[in-house]
Length: 532
Image (cartoon, rainbow, N blue to C red; front, top):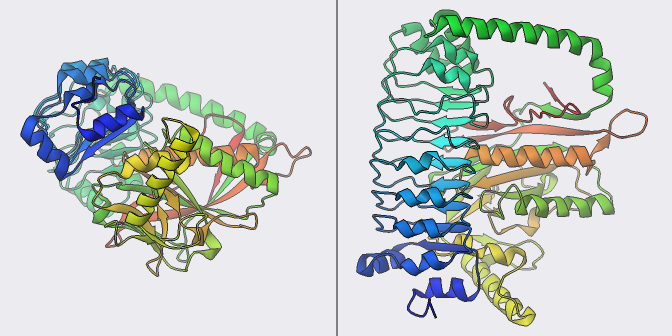
């Protein structure tokens, strides 16, 4: 057989026809140091998820191009100094995470992956990246902490999905005026660079909600002070009024054109406001208050599963039928937008039974993590639960005579070899969530739940978390699951009340709030977000 002399984990993956493979930690690193990477792994052509992390691996072989079903390729925290051109053959790839390596350049192929959603090359030695116009589905680009001298080649109107750019801690001197072409840009972090001036065109990025220009060499001292003290809105207003545009003719024409259209739309919407309001689902968004819990995030999750976003849904009403649909919806989202929990994991909690106080998102050694898992009657350490689920999975597989796992058992590979397990703990240090595996039985949802905390975690980006929450809330309000009917004759439309939740670092500095004004903006006319 082709895998007889393969590493045990590769042979097991082949024997069980698994679609995921995780190679991480010191034991794998020792194997690589001794004989190099076992290239038989590239014969596992059913793989859609490959994770090689925390090893001494220096180069990815050309054979990577054989894994043409890959959708997720995670290669962070190695010593990789080169990626092969054959990566262009990975036409189904959606997530490419290759941070914390030693890359000095990238093949042009990295700019021609038509399904790619997220790129992370943070903390490398890159001086530039290929043009990204071929990555038409790109949403997130992370090039932070490199040696890049020129703003990445991404300013194209074709990149309609690009909403997050992280180029902080580089050597960039200029922001191109063409950035105004990125009309869906929501986050731009260009802190810790060599920027001396900001083009007026930046103010034309009308969806930009998070702008970080700190620690640059800005010549405009008033702008420098605003950047250090104020929010994005005030900075952009100053840029609009005081920063000259690089291409005044073209921009002015565009600006006038858009103004005319905007005025026309406002006139129409005023005339039809009452009708639209009556014939639409409503998302009523409440601002976070002093009494609203927040989530503190520690450094321990940085290399495990670093991203979390959350919100509260209030005044829910469930029936037996809608509660069943609620559970089914989470399964549907985990298999769909969450990429079988590879991209993100959803956890829902009964807010009223969570111990009062803030929550902490952290990571613990498997033996120190303790949780009472959903639908189980005793506490387990992370190690015990992992071993128990592995045992159940093997027994079930043998009983059913299948080569694949089912239920939560099929997600165990996401934690294989991890020195730390991610978890969300309450103010009394009780673990209420253990992503991507399970919630705690202590805070489980039920028919009587009135107020719900939804958390979404990801190893990819905050934008992935936000996209999943957007989709979850959209599905709830359009199907009426747990919702209050709106005041309309046939109860065809529903209303959902959502309260913002902040995520902060351990010192209390804000990392994000959800939903912000950049969230829950749907193209559909029959969903309205009503904001405080």
